[in-house]
Amino acid sequence: MKISKKDVLNTAELARLEFDDETLSKFTRQLGDILVHIDELAELDTKNVDPTSHVLELSIPFRKDEVSQVITTEEALRNAPSQENDFFTVPKVIEDQS
Amino acid sequence: MSIPRTIKESATLIKEREVSPVELAELFLERISAEDGKINSYITVWEEAALDAARKAEKEISKGNYLGPLHGVPIALKDIFVTKDSRTTCGSKMLRDFVAPYNSTVAEKLMASGSVVLGKNNMDEFAMGSSNETSYFGPVRNPWDTERVPGGSSGGSAAATAANLCLASVGTDTGGSIRQPGSLCGVVGMKPTYGRVSRYGMIAFASSLDQAGPLAKTVEDAAIILSSIAGHDPMDSTSVNLPAADYTADLSADIKGLRIGIPKEYFISGMDPEVEQSIRKAITELEALGAEIVEISLPHSRYAVSTYYIIAPSEASSNLARYDGVRYTYRCENPETLRDLFFKSRSEGFGDEVKRRIMLGTYALSTGYYDAYYLKAQKARTLIIEDFEKAWEKVDVIASATSPETAFRIGEKTDDPLKMYLSDILTIPCNIAGLPGISVPCGFSSENLPIGLQIMGKPFDEQTVLNVAYAYEQSTKWYEKEVAPPG
Image 1: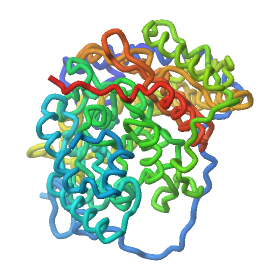
Image 2: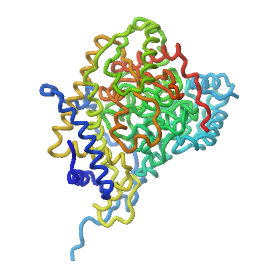
Image 3: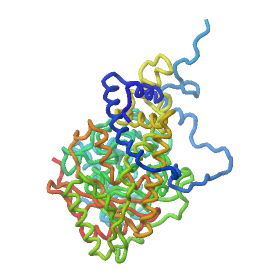
Image 4: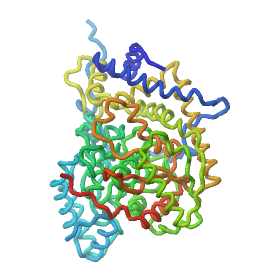
């Protein structure tokens, strides 16, 4: 299925990405080409086929609910571009009341 | 001293004290510094850490504590395996300064085997690519012809191994990312069964498909690496709890009576005639070695690329949501709002191919499209798996080409992502079904470019896959052909 510029913009909003006009046109064309190819799957009769979510027969492994330290707070924050008092910091989310 | 090319050869020299791990590490570090400018196969070289590890190995060995065939042996790691105290970039601007707080299980196990890690290999950004052109750190060049790609996404690992800038490397394979560069660079590349090797500390691309495995000069070397990294890991709930195997102990070139399936659909139209000729010749060779050749059909494999390009990007769009400008090093400058921070950091930190796949996955999972794309692909996945299950009733392994073509020129497919995606058409089915697969060199084109033979096996039957590749390799000895120094 071809995809419209509007679809690409909506998807970009969901994916938290933004593009300039040139990239938007390029992506609209390229994603459209890929989706047209993928449309071949419609040929497959999958009425009585179960979906595979995973190749292994997985069971959930349990362990004792014991607290253990894998990494420290300091280590967890080491890659943060901005931090303060053991927290990640970001621009203000709640506006000042005035 | 002549430079050893294999782990096996080096291990003998080390064990018999003819060469010290320090001498060997120095030799390879010198080679990297002299030659890697031409192929760009490393993102980070561990000069000091490698020499430290080599000195430690030397000390242990001289005390009589010899750990086995990897002790003191210089190898490399794709820059997707996190390593403590050294950056792990995943080929991305997003992680260019990222230093993980722990070691991946693969790195941990290789270090525990006494190996000397020389550094971290270049790769396609977040392992997304088939040519190693999407790396933030620049493309890797194929040592057989530096105007050509090495394949991807483990292109740095394959190129470094082929050029002997390490004895072997560990890469990852989500849709062919070990086997295809192995084929294009003329080295052995193996993807084990999904669940065989722990994914702990391996930066996630598509979690239901990703698997780590070796790139090496010979099948035996690949078996040595696999024996070191395989096994259950409590830190990865999808790693399978089976006893750890020694794949070298049972390595055998006797394949008499083994049934090898040849899927007729894998001689696709548009395949390079020289590749087809090489594969047909390799099949004849396998038959001469006593294997029984059986024609089989895997009718749904032709839908594997479409299935993959829904499932893998969907999983990727979710896995890569964590790179939000808050926790993992890269953040845009002066964001005004939190929204601004998310959009700008992600748009600046990711390259085009990664963005394309995030977009594709987000679209496939979005309201109104989920049934038509994601659910449909999961059903197609079932059909592809069932094809293999039927085949295993008749054959023990399946053989085909690894890649329908030899190494293509740098830039040849960058403007046409679909064309790039189709270059993994013969490797993707293995990932979709979680099967083990190997690429072993099977000749050269008239332009002196390597060609690879793919052997796929039953789940957890890595040994038979290795044995078939070993039998073929030992009777043809393509690995003896060395790359001329890149010029």
